[in-house]
Length: 114
Length: 110
Image (tube, rainbow over all chains, first blue to last red; front, top):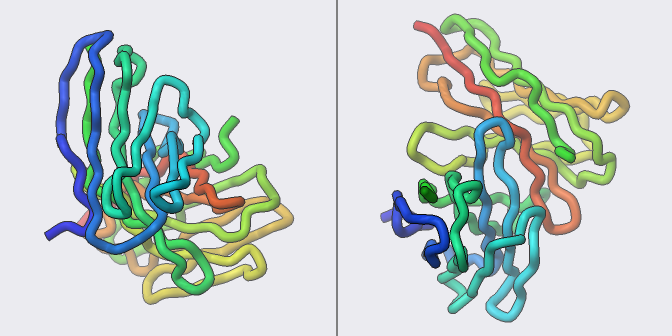
């Protein structure tokens, strides 16, 4: 079984709808992240959390919100989806590996906003 | 403004030859750098890292070089194999955040 899972894997929605993307992990890591990937721009950080009481904005948090329901669960919400939020979304966890923080990514959620 | 840049969107190499993927950065405060590999329909997976105080790190066929004066790092894959065909992202880490480049798609031809 995958250590970091994301649901749904694909979603098509309409402008103005509320959408929630869910992420679960079995790695026992405290740190979790949400990124979006756009062609030509790589991965950009939306939000990150270092424990259930700690939520931090990333580079591009406008239009998004998150909830850390438990150590293992970190959800990303789009309150009112717009077409330029069409992207591939990745959840990740991380742990300290000695000299660096190693990240572990989920398989991604492809979101299309019409 | 992107702090990490990968200016080559794609690279094609013959099997058995060397692949060199390049990355430039603007933030001199990065603590370390990482390379990730991504196959289609999967999330990125960690490949190799290098501390900002080192200039080389090697792991099997993969070597990363860091040139701090030029703010440039490169990933060398020797010898390249068809299974190495993927998108490669470099990333810098500073103050609890990772900053990613746009990726380079490597195609290793048999």
